[in-house]
Structure formats: C-alpha cells, structure tokens
Length: 176
Image 1: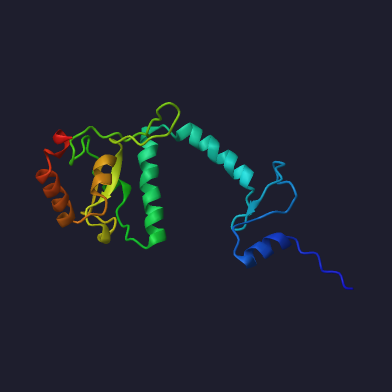
Image 2: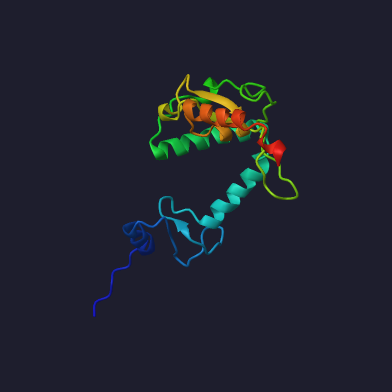
C-alpha cells in the first residue's frame, strides 16, 4: 500500500473539482474559527459573517447607503440574468416625490412593525419603463415601491385592461 502524498489543500481541491462553493478542513482559521471556507477566496465563513454584521450594523440605516446598495444589488442581478445595465448611480434622477403616485419617496431603509420586517410602500424603487431594454439611460426611473409593484412587468395594454375592468365594476364593492 502506497501512501498518498500530502496535499496542502486537498479538501479545497476536492470541493473545487465537485463544483462546490465551500469546503471544510476541520482546522481553525487565523481567528480560531473551525468553520467552512469559501472555495473561491479561502475565507472562513464565520469571519466573513462577523465582518458583514459589523458593516451592516454601522451602515444599514444610513439613508445615503441603503439606496446606493439597492442600486448595486440591481446591477448584480442584471449581470447574473444578462440584462443590459449601463446607467451609473450619478445618472439616476432622484425625485423627492413619486412621479406615479405623488407620495414623498423614502430613500432610507424600510422600518419594521412589531419587530417584523416590512416593505415601506413609499420606498424609492428603481423602475425600468420597458423591462426588455434593461437599465439604460432614458429607460430607468425612480418611483415608489408600491407603484413599481403595481406596474410590475405589465404592458400598457394590460394596464389599460385592468383600468377598464375597475371602471366597469366601480360600484361592485358597494353592492356587497
């Protein structure tokens, strides 16, 4: 029986070959955590979590940072899904009021009710006027989350049908 030669990161190499994102060595990291590590960066997940928690605690409720993080999250999702994203943060027009519903926009974080995280309907939201065009200059507007949710990915024709339906049945709720 021949002995296998010692490989410094056998666990990482095995995880890498299997397409896994994390691996476990059973050995402590520099800070003493015995936790899984990321294959791509070799970083201990517990260390990464602690660093992230400190950053979130310090910056999460800062209104200047929450909308900026939302913008970058949109960019990451767009890149992952192959949606064009050429607009920069500075090119966004940030109105004080929602151009659709007229409510004052909240550029800060959503606040929770009774300890539960809820979405503020007046939270500023990044909208693509024509979803298939992506996040490009002239197609991106800031509207309230409620308006964006109502609009969703509907076409003008679909919105007109909903409006017609509501107009035809405006007295329906009074009859019940």
